[in-house]
Amino acid sequence: MERDLQELLDEWPYEPGKINVRLIRGSDGESLIQVRLDLGFLQMRSEGRPDGATPHGFGSLLEYQEARLDQILQTGVDSPPPPPPGAPMDDPLSGAVQNPPTTDDPESPDEPPPEGEQDDGIGAPGSGESVLEPDANADSPRFLSSDDCRELREEALQYYHRYVALLVLEDYDGVIRDTTRNLRALDLCREGAIEEGDRQSLEQFRPYILMMRARALASQALKDSEPKAAVLAIDEGLEALRTYFSETQDEPDLDASREYQALKSMRDALVPKLPLSQKAELRQRLSDALAAENYELAAILRDELRMLPHTGA
Image: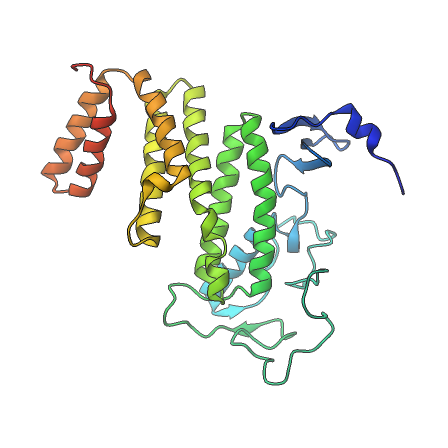
């Protein structure tokens, strides 16, 4: 059916420089999130996969691939895992094909693979089941093809759109849920992708997701009138970022990280709201860390003490 959407667009004008988000009730009674873009709308479900699909009968492609990994670890055999009990089987994405053809596939789905490439160590196409050869350099099986990783990236983008919208709506629990979920997707691709490029393709987004998750945790704590818990959430986020940059850069430059500086600024704004006993508590933790010869933690606690306001306490 052809329909001009201009009337709908005029009902909710786009405001440049602002993330325009609203929560509505769908025709099926489900809660929906709408985002007004400059040329249209983005609509997502507030629970489950944002587009409402159930790939292979699972709540998401990530859940499907995690179930696939569990089966490989338990049996050593790579075959489609059974869907969870009560899963809908009429979903267009819940069929048995692991990598359905898309319009941007470089090769025709009907074209057979070149001679000699029928078995890449995962199993012959169409076999439905194969035995994985262990990778001596991997802690977990390398079982995700480039198409698998592409689909996981596309799905993660849906959750990104949603958690940004949820932050605007101040649904911090939803942001924590979706950022935690996307970190799982990054971990799965990093550990399970066959190709090195696929293992690294999502890692560039890890600092941003870590920052958004820490920000949501702190915001929820503040909403619950728990400023100390908010500072702790930010400290854990800062430590996660320090660890990430230490592992990925020879000479980490935290001053150059917008994510690190954003959390540090949020912490600086929160510290004056802490009770005076916070300094005494940090001093005790520092003393305990030194007694236990945990010098790495002691260095972090010293930094935290330096950042506290000088109140004489």
